[in-house]
Image 1: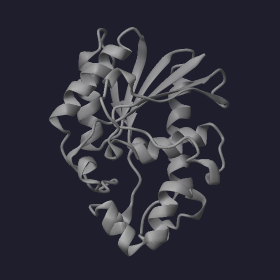
Image 2 (image 1 turned 90 degrees about the vertical axis):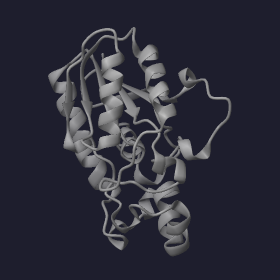
Image 3 (image 1 turned 60 degrees about the vertical axis):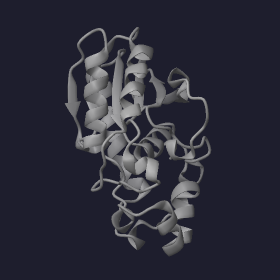
Image 4 (image 1 turned 60 degrees about the horizontal axis):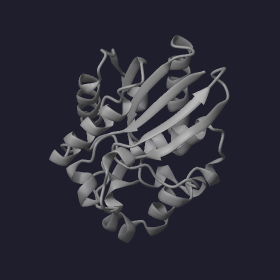
Length: 218
């Protein structure tokens, strides 16, 4: 059985501000995120990873590099462009409230009804496009490291779409399980690289948070 451990990057300044980052926007990790990545490393320490893959975007790179460095055994880290976040076009850099005021239906559909989301309206990337590149990447990982554990560090929206795409969910039901939080772990297992089962969704217990911050999850 191959297991894939999908990690959303640590929380950033723009996450805290409720601002869309997308593929062209980025902001530094919060100081508290560094401690949370260390807590994640402790949680993952017992697991032997064959390889780690990461999005090229700085916030994911910073997360993966700190995480891998904190693991007890060396793990090779490869950057894969296919793990990048959604290209959100004109929404990138805007606050959620600003997007809601300008494109209320667009924001609602992006977060809750992917089957109705019109990427062309903002000059961005569609859900099927993201799912296609994400699934191709994971297929390559599973082919190269069968029956082993693989670490993948990416982004909230891309992970949500990609993981649910691997599970075979239709677009209308991609968001049924809710969002993914910063520094969370989601695990899929596969015996053949074609059929996947969900082992764990959005695990964050190791962060020991006292309260739920809505800006943590997308």
